[in-house]
Length: 142
Image (cartoon, rainbow, N blue to C red):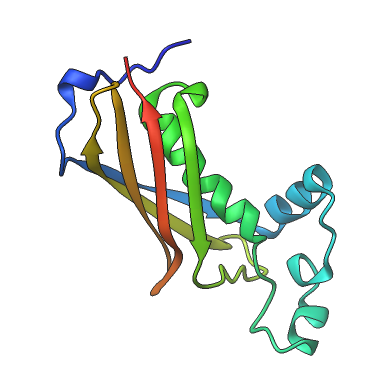
């Protein structure tokens, strides 16, 4: 599979439109099962509040995965991402209701390299908080 975004059609400074990802408690339970991270701060409101959190919070790696999903959806090929890294800067608080929380992710093409690779810088927010910082991916384009 090759990236559907063409290197020659991408410019430095190009904005990648924001996408919203809904996060509900059921998503966190599923992620806990897939990842093996059953820490109760990710599913039990009483426990989360007992340790000083405002409510249940999403797994950091779940939040990071949404950033990767954003990049792979844009590129059109999960295998096109050759490097990806983030720092966690805030929590995604997930209330126990039908709406949950929203992670909004957007991107900018920061650099074009000669090897048909581009560097994409991501902005990830939940509510008023930036939840990932120094989020960037190197993507191999066709």
